[in-house]
Image (cartoon, rainbow, N blue to C red; front, top):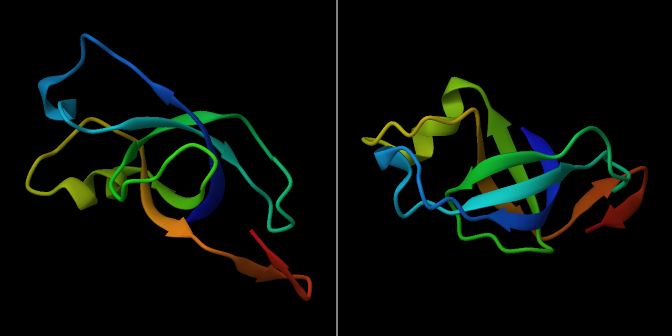
Length: 93
């Protein structure tokens, strides 16, 4: 699992049928310190996250698991909304 901040959404009028009714969000991965790290990515939303929220996400085959029995074509999915986290003796989020 990795931390990220939701920084936007994606609108796709033509997409795979298994993606219908699933929200696509743009994520900026975060370091434990809360600083942006790495490239942005698009992830499927399984928890109802919104722009500006901190989330944790998974990559790989496991990204489709929250949508079972459907098997959407994805390699990243948001699986939780983060209220706050502790790192280096400080509360983040």
